[in-house]
Length: 329
Image (cartoon, rainbow, N blue to C red):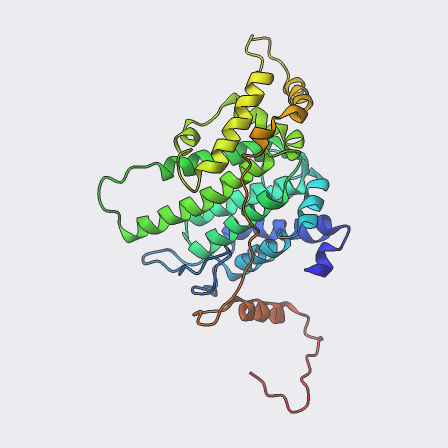
């Protein structure tokens, strides 16, 4: 980790290839070699990721990539490098038919995490996978993201709205175990995503994330307001609402029908961002960084699986030697 984050080209040489590999995850075959009892990606975790009736587990290589990202995004310098590095065309990472141009790698990372999380909800509903993605988003929230692309800002709002709608669903009768499992995953992912929204809008980052402010100005989801009293999810949402309301008062979007260009409104928002009141800034969501840890007593450990995959991919001419007298495991 220390070697990787010290590289000046870490986003180009390390992060982009990881994202390109993750983009293929929904079509990758499942090996079933995943940890089901190892300590989770979130601090204080340890919940069993197995659930009765769930589809096949995600590929082990996908989890290996997510755990790598979890470790790297715990470093502030890595996150800053991801925000500084720009790709002329992000479609090679996102796989979109519509080109996403001049996009920061951090925006591609968030958009791709939302994509694979949605795939997991739709297929595997694997709690450990969900926790790993949630941990990466929480690390990005803590360390900061800049220069959010329009596409990513829109996807963040869309997915947050969808998760909030699910979290608000009333349960008319006692839920089945599988639904309890899914509801827990929804809340865990929603908690990290709302922290990321709040983190992008805290000063001084808000000045470089006005695309998100403008997107929220144009259509603030009512579901988010309905969750503001939630003890876990509510605090970051109250901060998001306070920021949007303040900008709405200072720089209301043009509703005159003249079709004001978005670039004009963005310039107004950026100019006003330096005046964001201290009482609004103090509402920004906190939260620590997340890492992966394995503890004794787990039913499966991830490191041996990663090592076996690495040995399989290492060229045959590489010779591994053991000290004299060592015994093979």
